[in-house]
Structures are given as C-alpha cells and as structure tokens.
Image 1: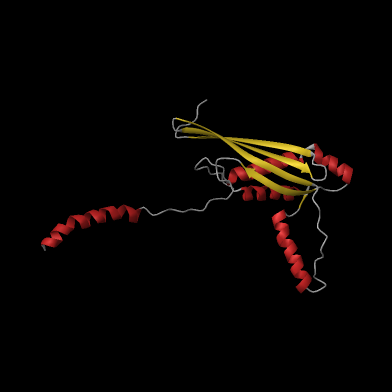
Image 2: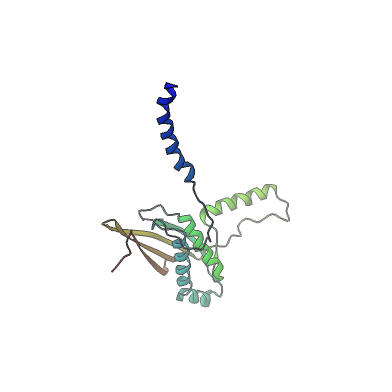
Length: 203
C-alpha cells in the first residue's frame, strides 16, 4: 500500500501528459489540386503550373513560330533539355518540366519528342520487339522524329530577410534554341516575389 502511495503521483503525472497526445490527432482533408495554397512561401506546385503555362503561352505567341510555319510549312518539333535549379531550395524540376511539356502539347502548336532519358527506354523496347514481337506489330528502327528546337532554362532565387520578415524573389529564364544553328529564337523570363511574415506587408 505504501509503495502504491509513492507511485501514485508519478502515474497521475504520466496520465496528464498522455491525454493531450491522445486528443491531438492529426487532421487530414482533401482539397482541389488546383487550389492555391502557400504554407512556407517556398516554390510550390502552383508556381510550377502557372509559370509553365504563362511562359509557354508567351513562347508560342512569339514571331519565331509564325516564321517556322511560313518557311517549313509544318509545326515545329521541340525537345525539353535541362532546367537548372540555381535557387536555395529543393525544387522538383521534373514536375516543372512536365508542366512545360503539358502546356506545349495541349497548345496543339508544336510537337514534343521524348527526352534523352526517355528515348533510352523506348529504344530498348524497340530492340526487344525486334527479337520478340510478331512482324506485323514490330516497330521499325530509324524512324524517330528529330527535334527542331530545344528548350533550356534555369531558376534563380534571391532572399531578403529582416526582423522575422522575408521577401523571396524567383527568376525563371527559358530559352528556345535552334538545334541545327544554335540560334536562340525565343528568350522568356518570369519573376515571382513573395512576402513571408506574420504581419501584412506595407510598402
């Protein structure tokens, strides 16, 4: 009985500490994937989608596309190259590239061919078909569509902090390069500036 009396305060304390943990369960709710949500102020899915859509719209509205149609009589073929992340954050560049490709393909103004990495897998499949597929379903070698242009770019960032407040500035530069001549046919730039802090920013 004496031992129980000495142990009782410790048991009660443990119970008190346990109660908030039991009651503070995590709440998860589903939201619209297109809804804009900024929690940390970092580059996010909304930035990726909006930047891709705006920059590709600018690219396809530029004079190079009309000139190509007039000179070649067909739609240009584009391949996406590297997008270098020179920011201070981890940015899912692969997602950004997919947003860019989606905007180009959905425009109907250009063709987009597989990247170098993707081509390796596709060529391996054609080689496998050569050995194993029936003649009527075999896909032929040497019939790939060569790209006319390559899209390249980089993402840069500048942060300005003071008194618990921060401004994050992102600059995204894209360029479309003629693969045969190395001529840059379009240069695009998009800037994003975010204020991060407890108080509303007042100029």
